[in-house]
Image 1: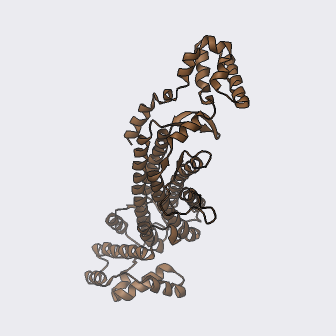
Image 2 (image 1 turned 120 degrees about the horizontal axis):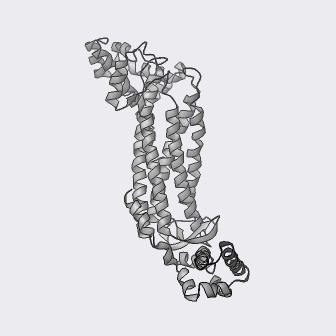
Amino acid sequence: MIPRYTLPEMGAVWDERAKYRHWLRIEVLAAEAWTKLGVVPEAAMAEIRANAAEVDPAHVEELEATLQHDVVAFLTALGEKIGPASRWIHYGMTSSDLLDTALALQLRESSGLLLAKTQGLLDVLKRRAVEFRDTVCVGRTHGVHAEPTTFGLKLAVWAFEVARDRERLERARDAVSVGKIAGPVGTYASVDPSVEEYVCAQLGLKGEDAATQVVQRDRHAEYVSALAITASTLDKIATEIRHLQRTEVREAEEPFKEGQKGSSAMPHKRNPIMCERISGLARVVRAAVVPGLENVVLWHERDISHSSTERVFLPDASIALDYMMDLTTQVIGGMRVYPERMLANLNASGGLVYSQAVLLALVEAGCAREEAYGIVQSAGMRTWEQGGAFRDHLLEVDAVRERVGEAKLDAIMDPSRYLVHSDQIFKRLERL
């Protein structure tokens, strides 16, 4: 991922130095396990502990240019530091034992950062949902005014979805927190199973239940799928705010800082650039799902077709979602909300948003449903085409005047009626 969208903590997880640090730790732990088994002499282990130090990524890259193998290049650089005892480094292991176990550590760290930010976003959504729980606005279906709702409910819906994203990320973290030191085809023919047990225990990982040369890639597919679903949640939030910020709607808008410029040509502009950035990066994260799924299908006990793609999409998707989380939390926390515009838009249709309530009142008063539907629809069409208030067009109909009456019609068209059950929803929200 380019530096522009890379935040320091997540960037550090995927840094080359961090990767080599994991590799070093795994190799030393494996040597310790062999020492416990009496294979590696205590003196050699002491030499390894004394001399094992971080390698220079630039030197590894230089070696790889000739060797054409990153793990061999790393082991060569490490061997230069350790000396003769380095013959016990990587003993009985295959490259993927090192690569996949280190990748598990990176994915676990990445998941931890994402989960922390998910919780932060959830907290902000809950706070602002409570703030606007009684702020009435129009609900839209197909982009058309439907019935009254509240802005707080809109935020609560997002909060519950983010909570589900949190659960998915937790499951994904568990799925990828798996190491493997089982040799070239997973049979432990060249490495005692206790080595894997020891290394994974020290790292806080589980050992793969049954492996080939690699940890199975359904785990990584689950990880990127969880990231993609979460990115889509953030995209949904951002897209809604973008719609609400349109000039003709203007019910809410993302933060606009003092001194900020919206356009190089039009000084009046306050564009939803943060939300647009979230929507754009969501495409990057979702794009990781296809290679993630395709990597599940490897030849026999393993081919290397997954490796090149994972080096790109696993860091990029993780870094992009981390940035999106940060940005979405800023947007929700600093979002400007305009209740007066919400009320004006609610009333813009002349009361058509109360059509179902009128329909039900007519049915309760004894009208057949089809008859009631026809009465309400006819009055609604006249409101659309002729203008005026829906209420007035309804009162032109004898059945409405006689069966419902003016007073009840006015009571039906009170938006506060739509708040009567909001307590139930917000009690559920408190439990998140």
